Amino acid sequence: VILWESCGLTRPWNNPETDIFRKVSQQDDLFLVAIKDEQLIGTLMGGYDGHRGWINYLAVHPHQQRLGIATALVQQLEKRLIARGCPKLQLLVRKDNLNVLNFYEQLGYDEVEAVCLGKRLINDSPHD
Image (tube, rainbow, N blue to C red; front, side, top):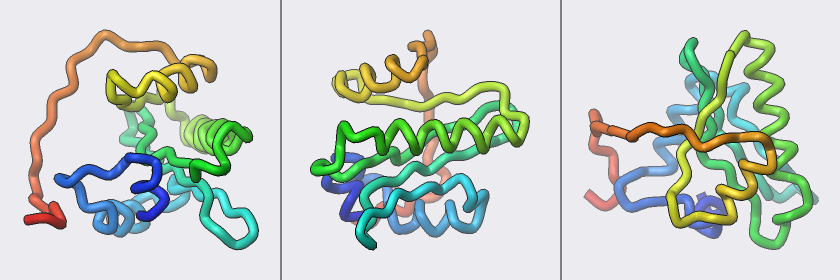
């Protein structure tokens, strides 16, 4: 969670500890981590619903960025999803996060014309 906070991925309305618990109980082989010198330096929480794959919580420690770690995590997830027969992979990026948008474009990801809708089913915010 500290890594996600240092990368600006956490939001007050999400509980990252709960997200981790849920992920390791569902498709835990799609929760990837990068370790260096026994320290967590990268994560990628992937998912597959039978129709498309998803990327969530891609994070690399700020001092370890631009070394190919994020690329390696994404490529590993892509391989695992292809092995499952996943035909496509999507993710959400905040519009003002230009560095991340450029990163994904360099990996061959294209912007998709869509509107993202959401509905909270369980209120698990750590601040409520």
